[in-house]
Image 1 (cartoon, helix red, strand yellow):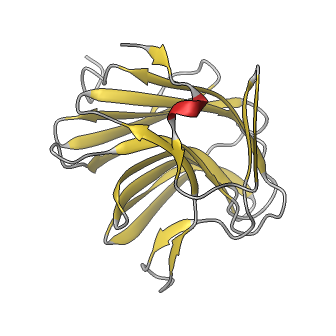
Image 2 (image 1 turned 180 degrees about the vertical axis):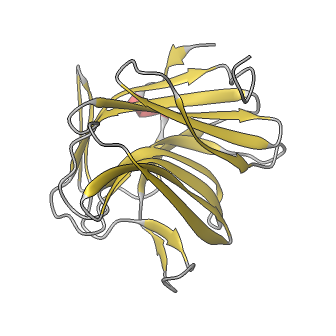
Image 3 (image 1 turned 90 degrees about the vertical axis):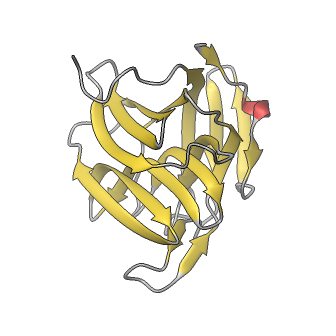
Length: 195
């Protein structure tokens, strides 16, 4: 069940400023002001993310890898998992207040947000994994070939039609280009914790 997903298999939620497919991956230039957020603390709804989505069936997982090269406040990339306009999850790395942090936004009507700094990750390959099993999406991430880190366990309706794939946003950056190096479909994690 482990196979590469072609960049052409996905559909954009919102067209980026520029997209180029090369032998070494997908280069996505985000539009300035792009973001995904609903209401909490800020009072606004932003729904202009660049997410390339394909079906994520029950009992499956996706892995997206990208090179971490951010420069402006709130530059972000990773995976986007969508049920509908008010129910979605984004997870990956974001540049917040001057440091790269690994985190997730889980949205069910309104958004929440969690971050954890990842010093030393800049310039390296980050992989974000979303594993759909039962009533949950388990999100893990790692840099290069280091061990996986648990980012979040979030509720996800087992009967919902779900799409997922790579995403990026540039809330303040006029020239963010993210180099995605792979997008894979795999079997879901066998357990929440190592045995």
